[in-house]
Length: 300
Image (cartoon, rainbow, N blue to C red; front, side, top):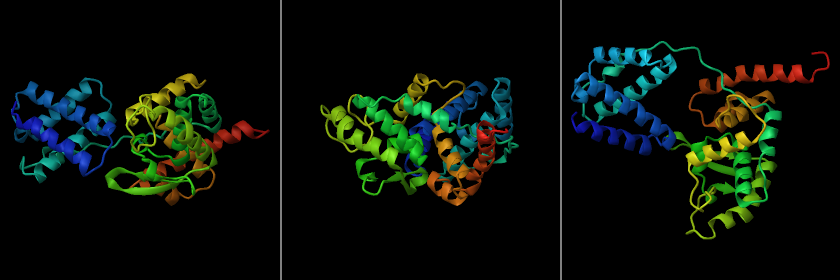
């Protein structure tokens, strides 16, 4: 296959990092999707990116379905490849974007899963605050729930982004957009303990740096590291079922709206570019209120 294929991929990754400011986690998924298409090109004997035609994409889609991919996953891959080719057209690598001709019907939007308040209590109870790592984990969990920020955003927080006097953190979001998010007393107390004790212990043998959250060696904690910590805390708690770290962000939004926060405020706090992304939580909130009613009303 033409060596320009890998050059084009590197160009796209650089675009996602610099212009789109996507997290490393998201970039890795995009990279896997594109490499999967490169493998398909090789199998089909397509030598270069400008030789891909609409008919080839239909074969690619058929192959995805034959391999058992859900419609939503296939749509995500096509969206990724459409963005990839859009950049290549912009940079004059190819003349046309064959993926612009492909339209896929949107499936039913799945409601986000979230933790109920009693479930979150179990998660917080799984954090010990005696060891430096325990203090870090508690501060991490408290800040994520207090702000609703993404895991990737949390890994980028520097000490200078945190204003402990007024309990506000500056978050660097997608597309180089910044937003200020307040946090409450629980997160404030956990952060104070961690910064004054645990963090100092963890970085004492390391060269000084400015990341808020550090790993066990004292270096900056990555987004992948944060997910690993959260998954471990979930395993240590008494929670069961299908659980993932992003549910903390969903819980933040759901609990705010269930307690009367307006949608525009929640949109700004979450860093959503479009209000439609936030509107899904109105449906989740109805389920949250129903369960709360059924659990607590004496005549339910």
